[in-house]
Length: 214
Image (cartoon, rainbow, N blue to C red; front, top):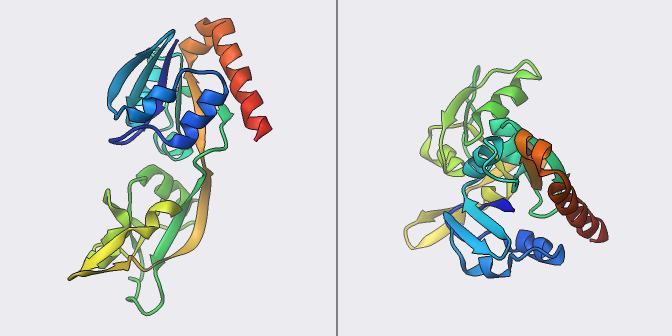
């Protein structure tokens, strides 16, 4: 089989690898492999790459299945089927702004820094609000630079710190709204679902059994 694991400049998350090992997949050696990489392990070839690449490879039928975060599934809307919530790497996409007293928000269309422009636009449009999107990879730092009034980001990334001389302080952002619960998901492209047959069904059942045991 060819399987993909999303990782950003390092090895895949240990929670994902632990779950895969419990399901009997040969993933233990991947703890020492930094992506992007192709790694052969017996009957499985692993693609370790950014989530967008894993999802694209699944959509094009180059992988039997892949593991990526729900945040990227929501943002990219790739042509894949979401097969299973693995219930690991839990997180929440949130809208956060500086805490009271850290600076007044602009009236009208607030500027929102994010790595998730589509998710952000949909979220605010659903309640009739308009925002000015600011594409910024390190979104939690954007309000401190004065280029955004708030951010849409994973809650876990709001803890980015700002260096002040020799000291460091938190980014000072407070969650105002929760947008979507996120976790690692098993996905497969349409071709893999049609052609994978018993192999993909067996993989899904093994992983489902492990997830339900947790």
